[in-house]
Length: 143
Image (tube, rainbow, N blue to C red; front, side, top):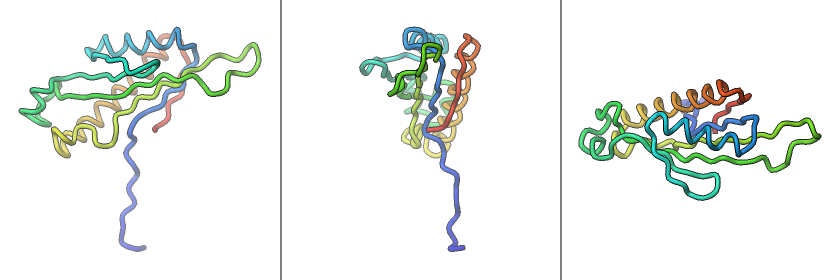
């Protein structure tokens, strides 16, 4: 052994492969974030930035801003490069929820980074459950 530690990388996001078409999945994803108080800003077709929390409070209190800690993420809704084969094959959409390895670090240091990563993982899991509860088969993997 050379004295270096092997550390599992922290995921920087989640990819959810969801059975359904964009016309069905896009509004569900938007509703999920809106119901939880996140605001969304479109960045092109199938891409938007979601954010929650108070920037002012986070600047003043850093990681101690509590539930109002500022969080942002990029959401991408992508259709597969190859369409499903056969008439019976279902459509799928890949929902990429990206928050980045440094999320929360700038305003909350290492505590803020840990808090942001935990909150993003929780939100990603809640999104997976939400889409599943809406009747869509979902497969998740880290990015």
